[in-house]
Length: 67
Image 1 (tube, rainbow, N blue to C red):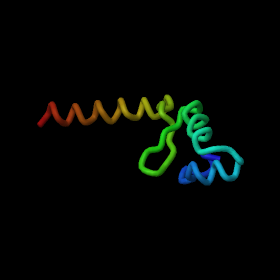
Image 2 (cartoon, rainbow, N blue to C red):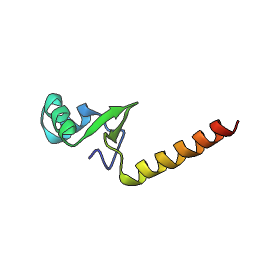
Image 3 (cartoon, helix red, strand yellow):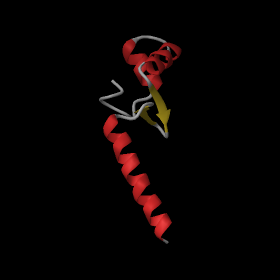
Image 4 (cartoon, rainbow, N blue to C red):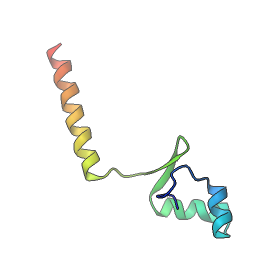
């Protein structure tokens, strides 16, 4: 449900599944998600995201060293 709708609330998820909000929170943590500014996002970066962060960081470092 979180992957389909990143804006879904724990309360709504609990109601749809018929379980407590605490249980939903526990399951979400087991799946490796955390709430970040009202969106559920994976805690760990995908490999592509890591490569992109390294690339951008190197570009910014290059700009910093030049100027």
